[in-house]
Image (cartoon, rainbow, N blue to C red; front, side):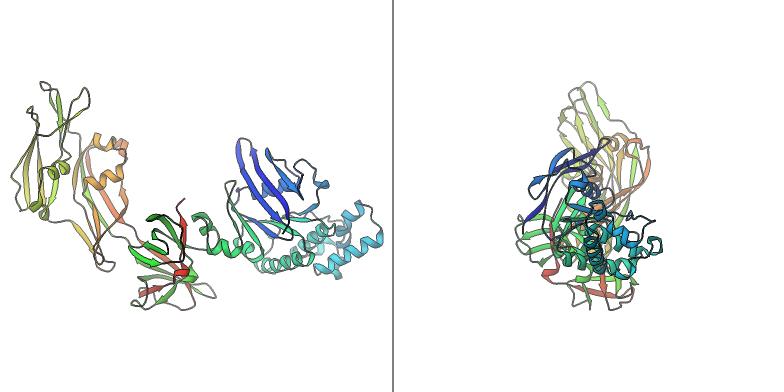
Length: 521
């Protein structure tokens, strides 16, 4: 097909805000192209630049290979149907459609032939003498389309022309617009934020966000192979799960490896897996590739929207005791030293090492003038495999010492048999300045609490993805605070004609072709 419109590096700035950020786009003859995106994404601005109502700050617009960037609208071989139609209320339907032809001073018989042909095309030939104010919204929209098409432009621009119509009429007009475009055989460029309109009518969809093109493709390509999380969420509904591309045609998520149809990723590359709700089937718990619990069922008319939770995420809450204790100062040796009381699980006692104790107590010594770390020379303790509190003394070779308490307690864990996870953490002690000076507090909290999670079936580690606390790190005061560690939970939306019961244990079934792999943005 021949290129009809070319946008080359189009940039537009409004009052210091970059609305279009270097748009490059080719549009071909006889295409129905939809610019799709949320409000403020730049789609209408791009349409207005093509229509001649705005000039780009940078870049060029070509039509049939000629630069039209600075031509006024009336010199461009295109017409626009606006959101509010802009019909003349004092004219009847015929005169509204004939307006442009009268301006061109075409012969009356030619005008009559062209207008009646257009009215037949839009199904309004019996309404030629009807007043515009007597027409419904859908009929007025057809008049606006006929008025734009009667001038036989190469391109018809449509700026959200269906937005004022009710839902039923919109669906009818979607079909009508596509039919009209096919019959007149010209290029339609349609602007909308409605995903269904784009999928229903378009030959090509251009998805935009924040002044940039996110993806260009057919409706099938955009829906089935979204380029990123934004496109996947904006076009229809999606289940999006973090995964790892183990190798070509093998993807891992929820700690299991599944076959897929995607290739070309790096080995063990982090990815996002998209599964559309209609591509999931609810089956018996033993017959699915994933197993979960039905959390909710909502009847949507032609199907049930069912939420299945395959993992709720396991959580554990521990106590963090914060004090304002100051480091021990050894002026004679030029050293400072600090350590915290710490908790130990009874099961840890058999494998105690000096390094483990130093780590759990966060014991450290340093030169206050240079901040250079000083090695801890000796760790003295008599920790027993019994619940209780035991003194532990840390010393440097220069004789600086700090004594803290090791508190031995029962192992602190939460077991979720239903979802097959265990999560562990211990209560811990910190100083105000340690909290305030942490650069990666979530990670430090996990280390300080010795927090980790475990998959009971796979015998593998599970990532702790959330750390919750109710204090302001920069303004923390001495006291006792709750810190909660959570593994990631997974919920899937399923569209199915079969009704499931809330609380039922079910399986989720899908095939390799139902998994769509996206690179992490």
